[in-house]
Image 1 (spheres, rainbow, N blue to C red):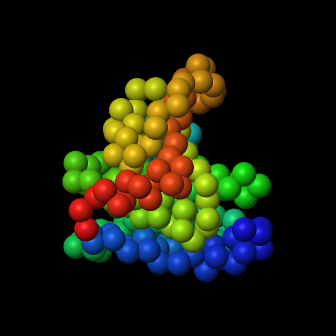
Image 2 (cartoon, rainbow, N blue to C red; image 1 turned 90 degrees about the vertical axis):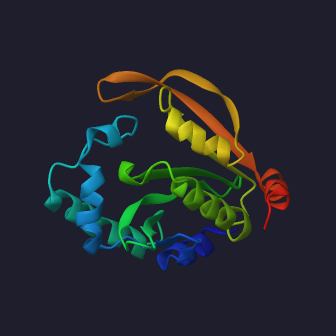
Length: 197
């Protein structure tokens, strides 16, 4: 895939659907829902960013993302719960390497919605999009050691744990050991064929 094609796809990011979720462009009007989880230290404990300090901070961040979307340089969807209509998290690609047809998956979910498989459902749909529409060969995800919830999602997605990089990142005034999991396109398609329709 050419860079211009990728920009065209994400400058008007398509809506994705699952049985319980809508994945769509983030909007400034999502600020209240995003701030509800982004302000929580338990949510950001294993992430690169710190808790949002105010709703206006979240609004400013979402305004900034509109310019990134317009340039086709942002690959993340808002995850919306169909039943409540709430934006309950984000899921998408933190990085896409076209030369090697590789993407890095990232996701965050409001803990109030944990335990129902919604994070896995959103991530599964993004994997489908990455392998089918973006023609990626490999999709990986990284997690900081100790983030067992995130690791379980990766395992449910059929990703293979590939190992730890010790003290690989300096995050929030400490070194963090980072694990990597990945799935290849043919592995993902084989998994889908085995699952009941």
